[in-house]
Image (cartoon, rainbow, N blue to C red):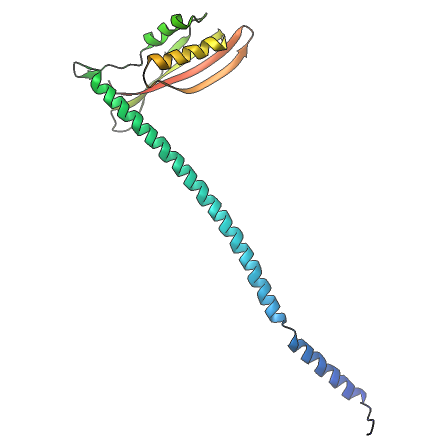
Amino acid sequence: MSDRALTPTDERDVQLHAASAARRNRPTALLIATGIIFVAAIVFAMWSVAEAGAARFRMDRLASELAQVRALSVEIANVRAQANDQRVDGRYAPQLQLSKLEAIRDRVQMPNRPTLSEQRPTRTLDSPIEKRRVDVTMDNVPLDAAMAWITEAQRAIPDLFVSAIELRPRPNGWLIRVQVARWELRS
């Protein structure tokens, strides 16, 4: 057998042919395509999770609004039922009277008289129902007396609710601002 040595040109051709065959055996294009698909899948998964969270938030918000609407409709039905029982000469006699709220001060033995101011009723369009509000300011009163006044007011006037409250400490007690309200038929 003769040993035949490769010439430098033949050796270079064999190396180029081997390198070309090695490149064909490496799935570079498949790896790049797979990487692109993987990155796209991650982006799509992150987008899906974000959309699911946003949808869950919207659903929770709508469920909360539905619960509020249902509670308000029950309250409106109660007001209408009471209105039918409390009509005087064909007209509705309002229950949220300042004199009732002022009389409660004596029952709970509050040291200072609260300041009451009735606000303009909030009305909904084309509805016979309005929200009557009274702002109550109690200055330099003990906290327990103020809370007793609020509790007694809710007990004395049906469907009265507290829509806002603000508490500030004072040297001799508390400055308490309360807004009480009640849904009523327009008088």
